[in-house]
Image 1 (cartoon, rainbow, N blue to C red):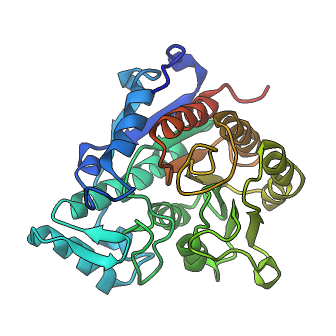
Image 2 (cartoon, helix red, strand yellow; image 1 turned 45 degrees about the horizontal axis):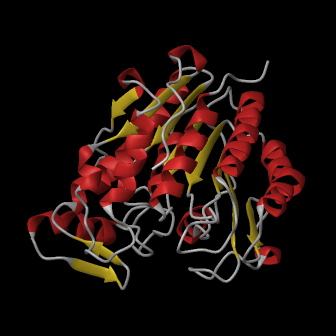
Length: 322
């Protein structure tokens, strides 16, 4: 595991990190890629760099927070899992067990708490170190390791605040966030921007000509490197986010595009995630009073995940451009 190069001063940014121990209790089988150790390695890396005053316990989302973006029947099925010790498989990759409801409510609650906090001030940023991930969960389906779409819950909550007329969701996970796109596909207040590996689960996000103007998908060929990734974002995706001028920027922060990740074959380094985060912070400073909420998604090589997450959160914490 990579070691932190030192702690970050509280003077550098208005930053909070939201998490909760319940997010470590969701265990979808011994051989499943989405294990609690993923989050534990992230927490270890961040605790090494950010003192306790940066940390905030994630609140519990309410049932009605989840039903803003999910069908009541799906929410009921997930929350009812807490009444039975048996493991329920919602699809071949996505399990729900007794500990899952509390993990889900805390993961979604982290995004809600973070949105409320950043909207209270300016140049405020938050990272939600939570699991299970969320961006594949759609209105009526839990799939792709995801039970509830955390970033969508946060976005729907934000749109209920008078300070937010429109927002952008940026997703740089190696897998397309099909659930997030589907939830907001008919809502022009939400710009959804994704780069992801072509031909990878869930095998969507590869027909951009059919997308409405507020949906921007760009797939990267397998083995794409840092130069290809940065050029795509610099020349096409970042300008579109800036042109949208969001009042709030939300990030689905998946780190499985790292070259070491076993579930994808992109060739990024942790520095690429820091570079993109810095550019996103610049846009947020220009249009959204510096307000950014980021939520952990994928990443399955533990060392790469810890290094990349730390690079991302350090970039969130940097002083805004002067």
